[in-house]
Structure formats: structure tokens, C-alpha cells
Length: 369
Image (tube, rainbow, N blue to C red; front, side, top):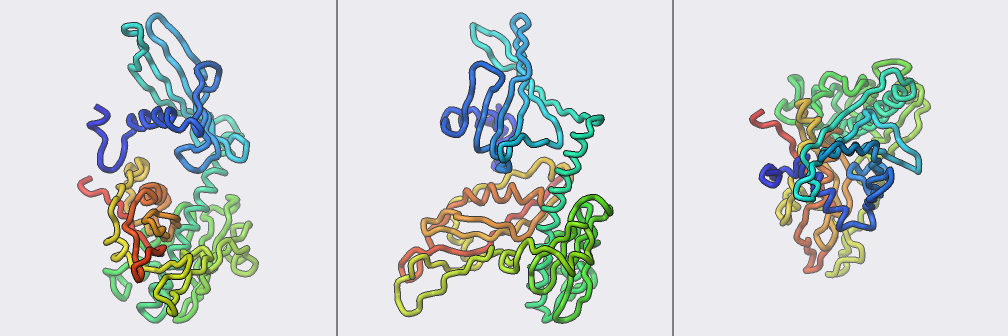
């Protein structure tokens, strides 16, 4: 039944359990299981890709007649320290003895919020603050790139978010320079966004926490493309004394890398040669495409949109590196996870395969819902 329920968008929840079991059997150097003791499973490559280690512990193992219930609780580690999760989850597996075999009959998922535990609440706040800051940095990158594209087309910078998102006062309402439409009203993830000091050749964009004293940083950028942050959460401080968190090259999606120039003196590409191609050309080279799994939390929140990635494709046609250019933080991880599995035909220059630098766009739509 679970095999039949698996869709082209990727495996469903129950199928993921089967994949984890298969992984435990085939990736013994990364996943270890234990038949006895308080630890059930450990892995050095958790599915989230955020933590260094995942450990699943056995909280209880209750045998009652021919029914056995085992409760498992995940623990995440980073840098050797256990990390506080926003919700404490547990899995209860119920098994029945049939013909001398234990057969899984039911899986229950529980979530616990210890609201009277100050340390848990503080950890929740800190975790949310980190997520908000990461989301805001992605949004700021999108604005920086959007302003650059807007200037290239219009000859000046956009002084309102409505112009960038294709609003009513945009030069061309059908064209969007940033795809995060939530920024049209200047609010996103507990931050207020503003564009100021704007004219044909200059602009400042700010992202300031909507709640003063929240402990979150403020962010700012200008036409140079450099992203700065201030620990006191104030936009004015960011502008005058902000710390650089991302330079202009990284904001443009190149992470400071210098692309190799074409060797015009020879018909053979230089060693390490990389050429930039359009999305259309890259699309024509695509031979194997894995569809992204729509994140359930994004689907439930009715979030849709476009994720734009900067990609480097190897001579063999494998996706060598991916960097987020723009896109909703709930959608971006799913897009990255899918695209890194794509396969391309080698791009030939003068008959020789070369690395390719391009952009990839992944669309998430809630069509028919």
C-alpha cells in the first residue's frame, strides 16, 4: 500500500521509514543500530542535514501479552552538544506476535511542549530567532539581486517593494524582480523591511526586528551589494557600524569565486575551465530530474513560490555545488535536496567537456488546492 501511495513528488512519511531501514542496512559506516541498550540508532548524516549526529533513544519497551510497545525519542547533536528542539517528539511502535514473528501493527507520533520549563522556552525563542535571521538574510539577498536586475532593465533602482514585486506602481506590473510577494508590504518573519535614501544610483534597504529587544540582529545593504548586521537590532546602527556578514560577490550568488575566463588563444579549454550558460541551455542538457517533495508545513501554510539556485555542474554532468539566490525558507531546502540529484549531459566547448555555471529555478505551486 505504501508503495502505491508513493508519488512522483517523492516518498511519503511511511515510505521514509522503509528508506531509513534500508539505509541502516546499506550504509553501515554512517548508520548504526543496536539490538540492546538505551540507544536504538545513531547516524552521522541525519536527514535534516543541519546537525552533526542523530541519536534515537529507547525511552521504554513494554511487553503486555502478545503486544510489545517501544517508544523512541530522537536527540540531535551539533559540535558534540545536544541541541534543544522546538518540539519534543516521540514515536511509539506497537508490534504483535504472529506465527513466532513480531509484526509492526501501529505507529503513533506524539509531540510535547513543556510550557513551564524556562530553559525549553528560552531554547524555543533562540531557535526561532536563528530561523528568522536566516530567512531575513535570504530575503535581503533577494532584494539585492532584484535591485540589480531592476537597474539593468529600468536604468535606476526601485524605491519601493511594490516596484520589485510587480505591484500596481511597477513600470511593468507583469514583471517581478523578486518572487517573495510577502515583501510587498514590507513585513516578513517578524521583521520590518524598508527601502530608503533611494534615487537613480543609490539605495539602502533595512530589515529591523518588529519587536524591539527580541535579541535578533538588524540587517542592511546598499547598492554595493554588501550585507551587514548589527547586534543591537537597530537599522541606524547597522548602517553606520554594521558588521559585514556577506560580501558583494556572495550576495550576487558567486560566493566570492572567480570564474575562469575563456582561453581564446587555444582551441582546448584551459584546465579548470568553467563557462556560464543560460537556464534555457542548461535545461536542454538535463537528462534526469528529481521532483522536489512539497514540504508539508509549507503546504499547510499555503506557501508557494519560486526558488532560484546558483549551480555549478561538473564536466561529468553532476551538480557540484548549489547556493540559494532567492526563495522562501520553507521551500528552499526541498528544492536544494531535489536539484542536487539532477543529472546533465556534459557541456562541450570545442569538443571538450567543461564545468558549467548557471541558475536553476524550481517552482512550487498549490494547483488544484
